[in-house]
Image 1 (spheres, one colour):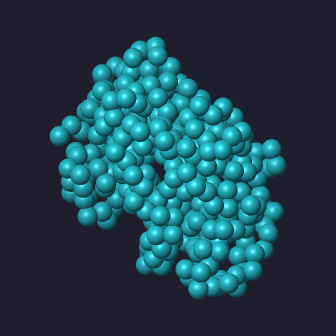
Image 2 (cartoon, rainbow, N blue to C red; image 1 turned 90 degrees about the horizontal axis):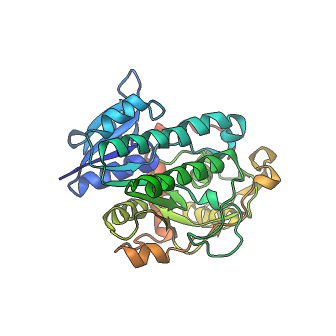
Image 3 (cartoon, rainbow, N blue to C red; image 1 turned 120 degrees about the vertical axis):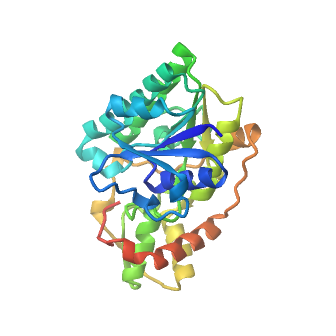
Amino acid sequence: MKKILVTGAFGFIGSHLVEFLTSKGYNVIAFDRYNINNDYGWLNNSKYKNDIEFCLGDIRDFDSVYKVVNRSKSIFHLAALIGIPYSYLSPLAYLKTNLEGTYNILESAKNCKINNILITSTSEVYGSAVKIPIDENHRLLGQSPYSASKIAADQLALSYYLSFKLPIKIVRPFNTFGPRQSTRAIIPTIISQLMQNTKSIKLGNVNTKRDYTYVNDVCSAFLEISKSRNLFGEVTNISTNQNYSIVEILNIISKLMKVNPEIIKDKKRVRPKNSEVIELIGDNLKLKNNTKWKNNYSFKKGLKETINWYKKNKHKYNFIDYHV
């Protein structure tokens, strides 16, 4: 079986993807940032640990990227800085990781003649919706330094397809949720706050809407897109074609956890007005027409799995008061 390199392998989606691919019999190289403790993040205690090849480096360093790419046949590139609030504080960090890191992958892949490269995008590149649902032809708008860095990375990747015939596929997930996600994300922050305080919860703008896909379904979409012969040089959404507001999510989670909290508006959790994306809902017709993918987890089923996981693993988190 050909080796698949997964960058950003120790994080939320990356760790699930590494395990998913390994469970399907693929040989996976898990690449993530070098650390002196050989810490593999969420893969430290994975039941597949002995079947995974680990490699530590830095996505911003061409030499370390080239060396691991040269040992691979396919690449699933997920390594990125993703937090929107921090991108307001340090835009340059996002350019170095998200744009320069993607350049290192592309240039290495070109030199090493890699035959299948998935570049992970984000629905944030669409900005506030001009039309609903959002298909892959929707205009792009960088409403935060984070989304701008991802637009730049996507366009650089497509330029390598057009200029060098590099076998690029852009994978564009809408909001992913599930076990292991940072409590900076809205669903974990709701769950974690309610685990500490059942009477009240701090939230920002509760009317924004997002399209949420459970992480297992996202992993299967990655694999199906990688198998497709029709999606080279293309962008493909991963979404469910439905969305939920934050207040709707709170209501569902509250019922599942059997609590009834009061909402306290926290101004620190509200994005700048012109930077806020009000509504995202993805059109997944292209994904369904070109692959065998299907959505196996309903939103409620995914929330139940997520809540149960956080309850069982609350000792792994320091539930501080994150601003989201």
